[in-house]
Length: 151
Ligand code: IDP
Ligand code: MG
Image (tube, rainbow, N blue to C red):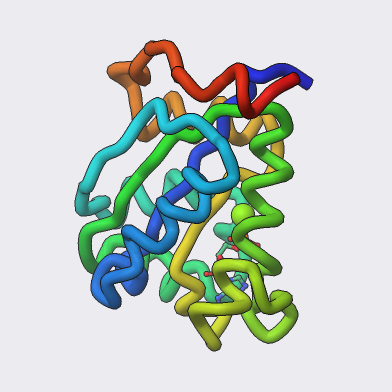
């Protein structure tokens, strides 16, 4: 594991509409992860289909892509030791009914089809998603807290 591992996290349209952008960013900031990419964008249906292409055989695929492209999302890239797995821990389980209190989905939503956030599920998918949503690359800078976050 490396301190420069990266993951793609998105606040989905329901999270943006519900005013949860700051809350979701706060949890990643408070944990100590480093923000290296951030943008507000409205995905096209084609972008949603590409992003979720692994799920194209699921019966909820059409509704999922319609929902994901229905309004702006906030796309982010976060960096840190074990951030792919750790980011999924902050998000909670896919179905909010199975998400523990203290997680984003456990605290902030109810329905699996409106679960407010996305997070990459593996290092390889994170690399693919970051390249897809941030083709221009991310931002490189020194985090002044790094010596307090890591031994
Ligand atoms: P993940 O977002 O936790 O990685 P995935 O299995 O990759 O979960 O599914 C992607 C998204 O598809 C979920 O976040 C959720 O919004 C939606 N989804 C997953 N399963 C269902 C379902 O059974 N019904 C409706 N939507 C679903
Ligand atoms: Mg997934």
